[in-house]
Image (cartoon, one colour):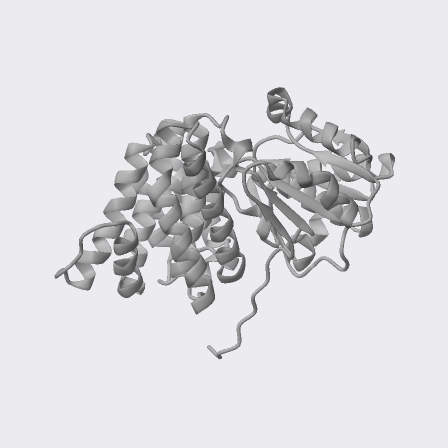
Amino acid sequence: MDGIRLLQTTPRIVMGPGSLVRIGEEVKRLGATRVMIVTDPGLVKTGIVDRVEELLASAPLSVSRFDKVEADPPYELASQAAVCAKDAGADLILGIGGGSSLDIAKVAAILVTNADPVSAYFGIDMVPRKGLPTVLIPTTAGTGSEVTPIAILSDHTEKLKKGIVSPFLFPDVAVLDPELTLGLPPKVTAATGMDALIHAVEAYTSKNASQITDMFALEAMRLIFENIRTAYANGSNLPARAAMLEGSLLAGMAFANAGVTAVHAFAYPIGAEFHIPHGVANSMMLGPVMEFNMLGNLDKFARMAEVFGEDVVGLARRDAADVAVQALKTLAEDLRIPSHLSDFGVKEEHIPTLAEGVMKVTRLLANNPRELTLQDAEEIYRRVL
């Protein structure tokens, strides 16, 4: 590889407890007057969306709402949101919620200004022009979507998750208020937090990693690993919640530029086919994929063990690398993440098709530190069955 590197991220990030109150000011900075909120029914029930609408209305700004986002959203949902935005005359889209809401907001924004259907934009750099301005507010410390040029949508017909990758998907502003994550249940805290940690791990071990993405990834791993157990066990601990949100942000910045690897490639087929939550799917696949991958970069795996606070003084690189993998497995156990695919209805007979699905995710496998074959994919799935 040559020495040329490209670093991209969200141009404006507002973060810290209470930062949500800045939302009206941030929208007006972008020259918008008519905002459409994209969110999900669950978040609406918490009252957070009503609070956002009140802050926007007091700015004063016109506000409409699209609140039909669901987990693993089908790509048709983005089209529905775009139609609503056009009908409302929106000149800015504000996404608030988990990764699904943020991704739908990003894609809806480009659909308003680009004529083709969603399916035309799957892949890398397929979006012709920028969409409506966007402001994203994550309420989970998980996907890092607020700082990535990526949106992942489900194709239920093909039973696949597909990605749109374009610099036009970066939001104009990201607002990170850890107070919005205080109400997350332990189960969601665990799954989303592990997702963020895996983003950092995979960015760090990606073949496309750079010195800068390594810096982001290492700090993300430190923040998340040191705080996720506390956030899980004591969800009202604001410093832990703030550290988790910052870690998720840094992990997003890392993988937006270095890419993720085979863990996500394994998670996509089981998520699409068996509707396993994304963070859970990633967590189940993490151990066996990392055991497979560590031979591709023993130095980095050994370094991760140190970041996780493990004592590896005097250990050989191979042994230190294995300590890192075992630390991740122990963390998943502490967070009570499901560990068997069979718990979700996956059977031996499904493995060949699932493995074929992994091999189709070439965008991610190209980043993997170790070459993966179809036989390898089948064996890795079997270890989690």
